[in-house]
Length: 510
Ligand SMILES: Cc1cc2nc3c(=O)[nH]c(=O)nc-3n(C[C@H](O)[C@H](O)[C@H](O)COP(=O)(O)OP(=O)(O)OC[C@H]3O[C@@H](n4cnc5c(N)ncnc54)[C@H](O)[C@@H]3O)c2cc1C
Ligand SMILES: *[C@@H]1O[C@H](CO)[C@@H](O)[C@H](O)[C@H]1NC(C)=O
Ligand SMILES: *[C@@H]1O[C@H](CO)[C@@H](O)[C@H](O)[C@H]1NC(C)=O
Ligand SMILES: *[C@@H]1O[C@H](CO)[C@@H](O)[C@H](O)[C@H]1NC(C)=O
Ligand SMILES: *[C@@H]1O[C@H](CO)[C@@H](O)[C@H](O)[C@H]1NC(C)=O
Image (cartoon, rainbow, N blue to C red; front, side):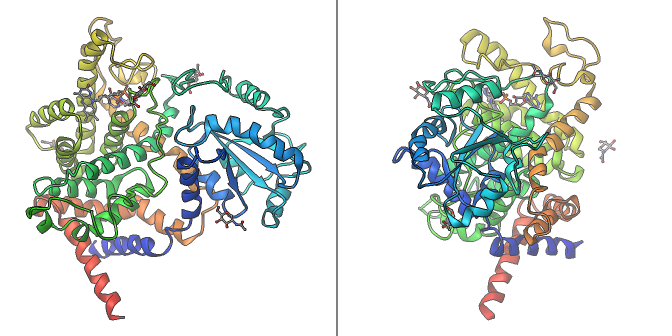
């Protein structure tokens, strides 16, 4: 068992060293566009054949528009401001309607792009193609091919006409004059479990936001350091996003250097202010996250949902991913994490009370997942009344006992009485089944689809699959269980760190 644990760890470590920089080019590119948007009018992203697949594969957007042009073509130059006006609505963290449509352009006059432009049968400039981003990855297009998911935009000559075309395609009513959170076209279909798939991006966003808040507010103190490590262990093993597992493992392995315990006991109570990972360059979920917006958790105004919704979804997704033997550890790590690190006094207090009222240790995934579900419904029930009397809720996302009947008919033994929401007769076996599939497979569906694109066969994919597959998780999970049994916290962290030290020594000898 130890052998496979060591193997898994070594594989993870070798990944940090070798292959994790594959797509950094495209990520920093996206970031550059996100942050420097005001400087120039470049909202659409310039791609070439090197960056094309990586950017289209990585985007959380539902649709992409690719403009093929040539820089010498005067019509294209004139068209640029029109395209930009629309791209401004959709691209980047400051977009009015973020996360829906990715708008890019490819200069076919550059030699490097000639194969790419051939594959998409570019015979005139500018040519605009529309489709799901994944269809463009290693993709092609022909004008008369039937059943193609990529279609050409036949009328996008001006910004107005392009937007009109998009509106017709999406059934939306966006306008070039839209302001942020105006004319929101919120995707909310209570009967569609598939919508949770977009939440994987929100979980990344919330994870990285939580981490940045912890660093910004210097919340890692000698008292809270252990609970931070405990939660890190949990997400290293079970975070639904692969890049968050990697990023958090990287931090966990280096934690002694990043945040020595003697620093904390001294006067200067700060972690990660110097060394390889500091506040300004720490990216627990990779350098592209945080993106600056939420998708599944997007509220209909700027003050609702977002972070706290993403945090709930993270906790639920962890609760269905752990092994039976880890349930008590996951429970205790989560309780302490919320208590020590969630900047919402009322929330941490309430949550702490619910945690404290648990008397018997958890011994199964099911029990812990159902406890968390009940705890969340208790919060919902309280907020339902508060929001009704104070009008502080999101009008488009009223609090409810969850899951509603539309989402999980079999979770209900009898019809809920309209005036007694708390007295719903739940079928707990069905609720757990539903939670496990909703926060388990459905949640990572988009990621799985993407993993099928392109990367198969590469070393990176093999390493990731090892780290992802349950086979590799069993030993990691076992180590977490040992952590629970043999010392209060940190057995796994100690183990990781001793591996890290050995590795450093071996390196310096060679
Ligand atoms: C640990 C914690 C404690 C909090 N405590 C408080 C508090 O005391 N007071 C306060 O004002 N706010 C509290 N909040 C914030 C509040 O619960 C909501 O997150 C916030 O109001 C945003 O609500 P939302 O509509 O996005 O849905 P959220 O409640 O954030 O839920 C997110 C999504 O999870 C799903 N969901 C809903 N209920 C359940 C359930 N029972 N089980 C599984 N999935 C579910 C739904 O799809 C929902 O859209 C807390 C948040 C957290 C993470
Ligand atoms: C392609 O785009 C990438 C990312 O912007 C850039 O680093 C690279 O230099 C470009 N290649 C060419 C040949 O222009
Ligand atoms: C909501 O989702 C369900 C299940 O996917 C689907 O059958 C239904 O048509 C959707 N409703 C709307 C209004 O889109
Ligand atoms: C939300 O929007 C209002 C008005 O547009 C603005 O004054 C406020 O600062 C915004 N709040 C946040 C948290 O961004
Ligand atoms: C958990 O403990 C209960 C008794 O407290 C027992 O009946 C049950 O089988 C245990 N479950 C697991 C998965 O060990």
